[in-house]
Image (tube, rainbow, N blue to C red):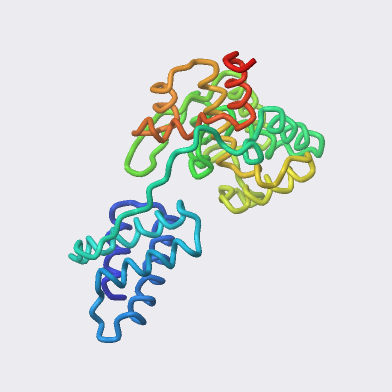
Amino acid sequence: MYEQLESYIGYLTRKERSRATVNQYRRDISAFIIEMSRAAADGCVTKEAVIKYKRQLCERYRISSVNTKLAAINGFLEYTGRRDLRVKTMRIQRRAYCPREKELTKREYLSMIDQAIAQGDERMSLLMQTLGGTGIRVSELRYITVEAVEKGEASIWLKGKNRTVLIAGRLKKRLQSYIRREKLTGGPVFVTSGRKPLDRSNIWKMMKRLGEKAGVGKEKVFPHNVRHLFARCFYENDKDIAKLADVLGHSNIDTTRIYIMTSGYEHRRKIDALGLVL
């Protein structure tokens, strides 16, 4: 099965899946192959063995993580012609709100920017504002180039899709000033001292340190949470979920709905405001 795994990994790479996705699939499928080799000494994998493995995953991981692993396994089984071994993913009832302890508020976001400014870290301040002012994913930050800033829009390619992200006036001016001071002549705006694009792990660590100094709970501080904040603010201002889906690059509005969930506290406040309880 390992030879088939390598063939499948090559297939995913040719399909232009992200490196992170390919690596996650490799890990999940490798673990599955190891378990199946133990369960089927004769090398014959049965549906019962796959179902048993699914139960084991449910005992060890959150349902969302289980479904991610099952998606990888089912894709591999289909690729290798064993559709008969595929198993159903777990059904999850969508929450009407997100946990308050994980929701990054606008005030907390701004306090992190203020903290970056206070410690003289203009790059981090502008990086945060670029994520917050465009709603892009951290992996898309490399498309914010000197050329894109000058044009006022960035062309982003991800998962075989292209979309245009606007760099609004105020953000554009701040980035232009930064570009002049840093003497950047082209390419990505947010780079290391060696002029290489900042990677996801570096940005994650810098945000964590910034959040700690700003007194923001560490469970709230990660790049994708800024994207969620952008989505909530955009929707509150415009109330057009279809437009928001286009801006975020979602092909499915159900995905966009996840981004605009308010906290349980806000959900309770709105229920109380109905005036149905004396």
